[in-house]
Amino acid sequence: MVEAMDRLSREELSDALSQFLSIIRAGIKIVTLIDEKEFTKESVNANPFDLMYSINAMATAHGESKRSQFASRKHGRTNGTESGK
Image 1 (tube, helix red, strand yellow):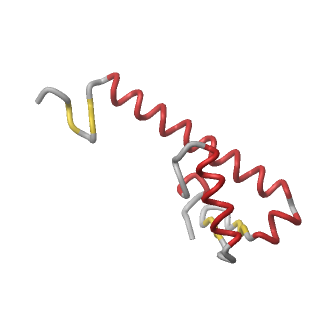
Image 2: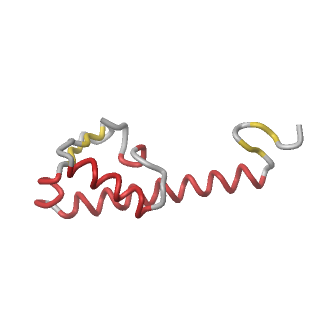
């Protein structure tokens, strides 16, 4: 169970998708709490839009992570601390 699909991974899309597919290929069901969606190998094969939804969420998560990293670096913060102090 994950809160939302974007919490599964913040990796680049190809890596996040590979992880997602590895999990469901292993027979593990992914359930998102926020919208109560269930993802299994069978469900994404039966409804490709579920897979597209997942890919979109993964791409969004990675994009937000990159923007957050850029903003932190721009303001001189690393790991929650200010640099140079």
